Amino acid sequence: MMGRRRSEFESSSSGSGLTTVRDVVEILAIVAAGVWAFYTFVYENQIKPANSQPVAQVESSLTRLGEKNGLIAVQSHLEIKNVGQAEIWLYGISETVLGSTVRRREPLATASPGGDRDYELTDDVGWTHSDPTRVFAFGVLANIADSRSHSGWNVRVGNSVPFDRVFYVSAGRFDELQTVVSVLFASKRVPQSFRLGSENGIVTIEQLGTASHDVVGVENETAATLSLWR
Image 1 (cartoon, rainbow, N blue to C red):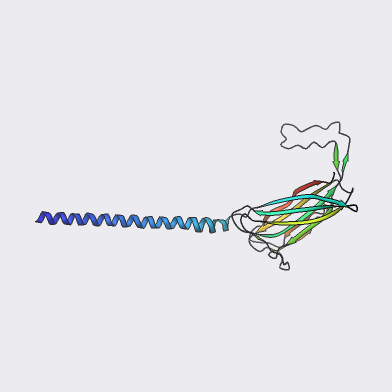
Image 2 (image 1 turned 90 degrees about the horizontal axis):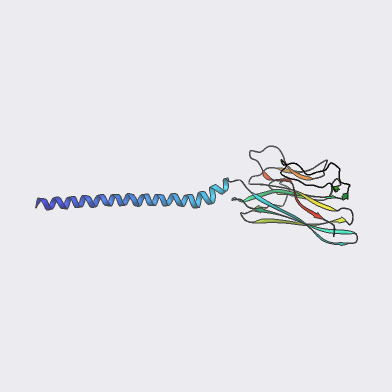
């Protein structure tokens, strides 16, 4: 009789221990699932993107549309695409189209390709460009850069914002057009303004005053080139 009661007690104790272990395992599983859910849905989707560096891709092209009455119509296409992990706000864009002429020149007797240490080479000894002349300029600031502006663009991940303009140049005046763009973007308000280069005539965007963080972007990048020859 005593032996049977001892066995029942031992069995009860063993069952209670297994139940405790099972409860602990279930609690740990729940905690692990919560940590995984927080990491996946909160950190990866909200905290990490919000603190990541904004990244944008700028695409630009110039297209000759036609000629009439001594003028050549050219379409400028500029597109800013968010290729980062966080939503970005555009502060502003500026585009300057420069025109130049191409003239033949006699090859220099000493002209020769670079040595083995060169990593890039352009051999243009048979022709030369004139100094570029500004033929078209376009720029716009967003309201987060200048409160007087009525424009504003927030670009979500994977989305893009296009800007298209048509301008005209005198036929026979230029042989080649080249566009230079500046695009600034970030996530907080920093005052900006336009600045006209005194030497090259390129329109850029510059920050007014100081800020606790940097505005990133593409500045004075040659984005597209178009030959006006047929």
